[in-house]
Amino acid sequence: MAQITIAKLNDGPRNAVFHVSILGDGGGDLVDQVLVDPATSFEVPLPPVPSLKISRLWHGLVGFDARLEYDYLTSDTPIWSIPGGEAMQLDFDAFGGLSDRSNQLDGSGKLQITTSGLGIGDFGTLILLIRKS
Image 1 (cartoon, rainbow, N blue to C red):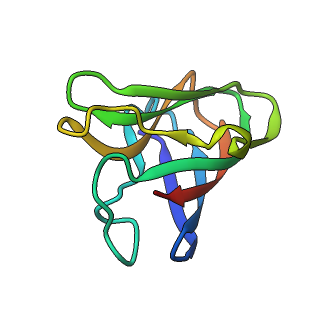
Image 2: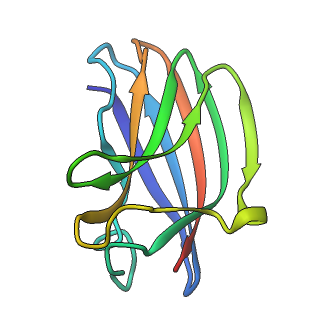
């Protein structure tokens, strides 16, 4: 499976920033890889749903595409598609951020990534500004 490194850059009372680095090693795509878990990713654990909103996203993917989603018991809740080959900075604050729409009883609140076409030598970076709800 691909190599993924997740670093928390900041964890304040209202916001957190995560840096995600992905490197394809020939082992295939990432499937439902957890990026942020409300129960374990913060100094003070958060309840599962709804507790996170993606406020801003910076991304650059080379050689593959990705999909962000929130974990949900029956099927994941898609949140954003990230095309490869383009570096972008996106601000979702204009409409309140990208929040988890999963049922409160069945959603875990985990932000996940699934890649498509991740091959050996492909690489990418995400910076996520997460607002705590």
